[in-house]
Length: 279
Image 1 (cartoon, rainbow, N blue to C red):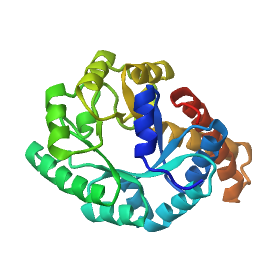
Image 2 (tube, rainbow, N blue to C red; image 1 turned 90 degrees about the horizontal axis):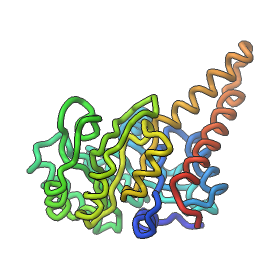
Image 3 (cartoon, helix red, strand yellow; image 1 turned 180 degrees about the vertical axis):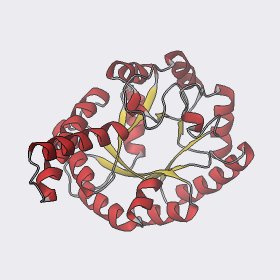
Image 4 (spheres, rainbow, N blue to C red; image 1 turned 45 degrees about the horizontal axis):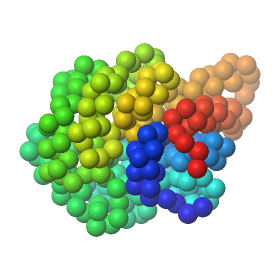
């Protein structure tokens, strides 16, 4: 099946009141695991490559092209998205290479600069047919708008969307990046308010720290795009540790990476069925 647009995943999900799962790719093995999960679940999936991931690999194109090839060769409906992009050059490189959407992250800038940068890059992305996600500025601490105590103001969010022309907005409702325990409790009333006030889909970052029942409740309240990374990374690493502990003589990385890839695929399939709707 040809690569699909992110808009064709997120828009129908919002209209149907279901989740649009978005899982991060760290390397080829996770991309393979996630594509296989989407095929088994028959749920549309957004594959995300973050700027941090690009820094790890040293460049964008090798991993992006591999991810695009997997998506294009899959029977599942898959889109490829650039996550938390602060570098305009990297954003342009990725979109021109085939990414169907990007999250413009100018949140570290003062509000007016955030608006100006986001609006300029959104206009460029729209000229390329790419879907754009963004977020409001940082609040406190390194986690910024995604700190557990941060909350998005509906009036400010509406003004930001109208000023920038973005297609989706990441909002602060009680989740936090890089949580290793699934204990977050989300502000469902705020989600309902934001869903009613904003004309664009809502995005939940830091979903790894949110338990299943809270994720279901968030989607029911109006959250659409659900980003998950750390939880699946933990599944991968945990399986690698177990495999190596069972055979101290093991040296062939394929022998411990393959079980980790399968573990991620199984958990991703479960989450896809939990969040999305089969196509």
